[in-house]
Length: 386
Image 1 (cartoon, rainbow, N blue to C red):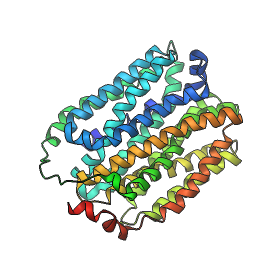
Image 2: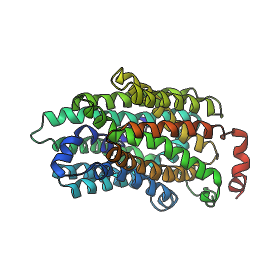
Image 3: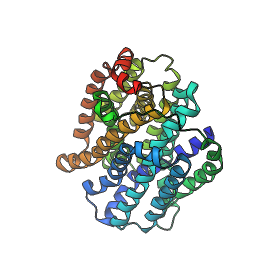
Image 4: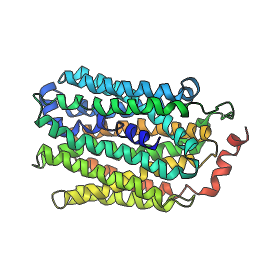
C-alpha cells in the first residue's frame, strides 16, 4: 500500500508544474495573457478546494476504491486533452478535469493514511507529501526535455497520462483489501464549519500553499525574463521540488511531540529565506534559494495535515476536518497564481509578488503561535462528544 500511495502521489502535481517551463511557447501559440495563462495553475487548485469542501459527502457516498480509480482516470484524460494544445479552451478544460481528479484523491488519502497507519501517521503523511512534491519536480524537469525530443512541444504535456495509468493499475488490486474496512462505527461529526479553528486552519493552509502555487506557475517565467533558458528555469523549479521532497520526508520524522509549532516555524523561516533570495539576489545562487524555499514549503505541507489530524482521534472526524481545511486552503491558494499574474502585468516583473508572499510568511509565523496542543480538546469537545 505504501508503494501504491507513492505512485498515486507522484501524479498529484505534474498537471500543474509541467506548464511553467513551456509557458512562453504556450502563450505565443494560444495568445493567452499572463492572467489567463495563470488559470492553468489556478483552476486546478480552486477545483481541488471546492471538492475538498465536499469531502464529507464524497467519503459518505463513494467508496474509496472507486473514487480514487475514477480520479486517476480523470487525470489521465486531463493529460491526454493537452495533446490538442495550443487551443486555450482545451487547455483550460484539461486543467479543470485533472483538478477534479486530484481534488478527490486529496480528500480521500488523509483518511486512508490515518486509518491504516495510525502509529506512523506523521511519517506516512510525510512520505505521501514527498511523493506529491517529487511528482511536481518530475513535471517541471522532464517536460522541457520531452518537448525537445517531440515533434510538437505540446505532446510533452500529454505524456503525463502514463504515470497515472501505472498508478491506476497498482491501486485497483491493492485497494480491494483496504476497501473491506468497517465504516459502521463512524460517529456523527456535526459541521466543522461552525468551529473558528477550522477556518483558521483553512486560512493557514491556503496561504502556505499560495506561495507554492505562485512559485510553480511563475518561477520559470521569472528566470526566463532574467535571461535564463527554459531548460535551466524548469530545472530550477525541479530542484525546488527536490527541496520540497526532502523537507516533506525529514520534518515529519522530527514530529515526535504533539506540539508542531517549532517545526512549523522552522519551515516558515526557510520559506522566508527563499523568497528574500529571489527578491534581493536572484542571479546569485538561485539554486540555493530554490532549494531552501522548497525545504520550507515541502516541510510545512505535511505538518499542516498532521496538525489538523491531531485535533480528533477518529479517522473520519479528523479526515472531515482535513477536507474542510484543504477546501478553504486550496481555494485561497488557487487565487494566488492569478493574483501573481495580475501583479506581473501591472508591475512588469515578479518582485512585487515575491515581496507579497514574504509578508504573508511573516503573518503565518505569528499565526503559528496559536496552535497550542492543550487547546485542542476544548476546541473540539462538542464534536467528540456527539
